[in-house]
View 1 (cartoon, rainbow, N blue to C red):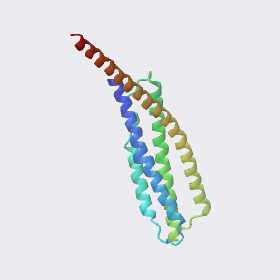
View 2 (view 1 turned 180 degrees about the horizontal axis):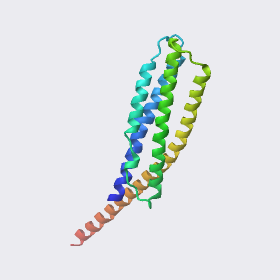
View 3 (view 1 turned 60 degrees about the horizontal axis):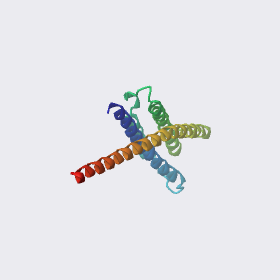
View 4 (view 1 turned 90 degrees about the horizontal axis):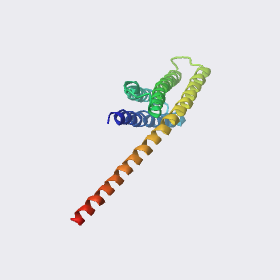
Length: 177
């Protein structure tokens, strides 16, 4: 019914956030790390990384938990919505920090701008904090996500059992006739 609909909508949003934003981000980050470690690669793909990060951010921005009406009585889902919203805000900031990081490195490597090491260290610190905050919020989301799936499974099992009992009862009635 109506109640399950908004829950499923939020659960789908969590899935979308995990796949199109978080997983995608992790892949980009691995590429960035590999890129920064290759000493021989003079022309690192800063522009490519920045474009991918922007795309990642756009994917997260398209997810809007605030658009989902949740009954305040449904505490778990109200909390999930709140934490998911925080995840998205933090994630957007994290992408911005990473874009700033890549932009600074690009400027430094091209020599067009004098970028102090302390600036880069400062951006790195922002990234570290954003990632820690994001992880905290993701844990809160995932706990409630797991609870929901557990509940949904139990309800499915109960329905399946009802079906079994019903069938048996029908079969019994038929065999009596």
